[in-house]
Image 1 (cartoon, rainbow, N blue to C red):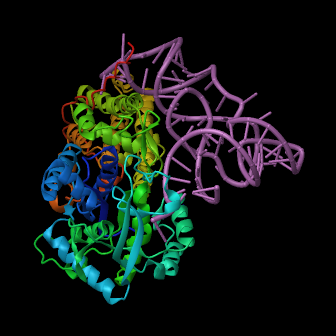
Image 2 (tube, chains in turn orange, brown; image 1 turned 180 degrees about the vertical axis):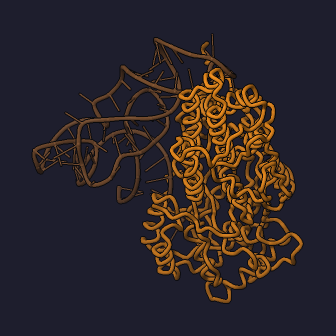
Length: 545
RNA sequence: GGCUCAAUAGCUCAGUCGGUAGAGUAGGGGACUCAUAAGCCCUUGGUCGUCAGUUCAAGUCUGACUUGAGCCA
């Protein structure tokens, strides 16, 4: 079993710096929703969080795409960046830093870092001959290519013969150190299946890799030889460090690393695991820096069971999707409907079934029915009941008191699906509890004290569910809290957007950490007006209907 | 070609140390009425990818195969 990332006062998490050769797709959205959720979770636990996202903007592919579109590469990048930013806004992603590899301060970081690696003697000049795929930005082995010399990854593109004098990074030197790292930190690469892949790959033996390109103008000049530019991957990984730099701090590697290094978590797609789990730690070792705590590689999507590809024409446009359905149902589906780390499928019917069942029928109805009863039977106030007087055997109290720990552990392990399942189980148990105890009957029998306990337990469970879902569903959780009479905006928790949160709860501080427990609602506090927290989504019409 | 992972109910998945299968959801039925025709209870669905082997006993272990996903700079 994997250990959770150690509890600590600060938490730094990154998405990849996305390559701007094309507009954002569903995979970008997925990674970023997960990173945002984990960042929100840590903010909710009062940690000082930095979520870094951004874009990787150099390289020949970008250069050529821009030229083909008849624009300056920087103009092209700016346009794509605007699309990413638009999507993050629509998905309610609260990033702290947007790191662009074309930013001025990034050049300084790269230069400083290069200097360190240079001084450790890990960069040398050599010749690289071979077939190069511009789309992959990689050299390909002859044996991996078909006769017509098309790249296996990009069947429409032919590879190009290159004979270059390049600078190389001495990756081969770090094989043993890398293997020691993997052995000593089994959680460095997750999930385990990905870790195995990396172990196998490294065990085969590591070859030095080229970190410079000639004839690519769109890049950062190599300090040791300005006629060459730095290979995009070397450049892009360092963008994480640039992201650490305080906006008003002077750009330097030392300043960037002063506060938060090493990064706690890199969330990536499985396609770029090698760069993060092999190249990146080796580069850091060479520079004499410590290694990030964890690299988590998530899976890929199919659409209705089929591989997503442009030639199939079945790409999912995340902007269109969020415009159609809204951010929170999508956030919920992608994190609850798919095991994080495994491949998943996007199917519209399943998506709608899951969000309707969980958010409208189960949790939504729980909130609504309970509040309506409190309105009718308890004058619209939190039922007059002290949680300490509720029996320790009460099923909701029993569940609720251990749920916080359980869900914390799940979030810390990036087990979003498990977190949601545990929370929804509490909602289900609450619905069952209400049916079993029938508050409407208690009311008719004039059993006020018992009625108050039952409704209190149900309301409090709904509150806890909302709190624990807040990293995934900040708007819905805020709405539930408001209806429960708690003024608390989960979009304004922690990070750089700290606002003093006014809790309508007695003896509470601005600290909401204790909301992880059960028994927070205070007897006789005024409740809000009940209204559905989630309107069911409509099933799409079947094509042949 | 080498390697890794997966295949269990219509769908998404659990299944521990081998003891002939579970959840959620969807489908069917029932009692209820506080509620978003929601919720609750009951229930129909499975030759556990195929074929062998080990074993008193295999979803589980072994081998081969099939299909899918991925890695092989």
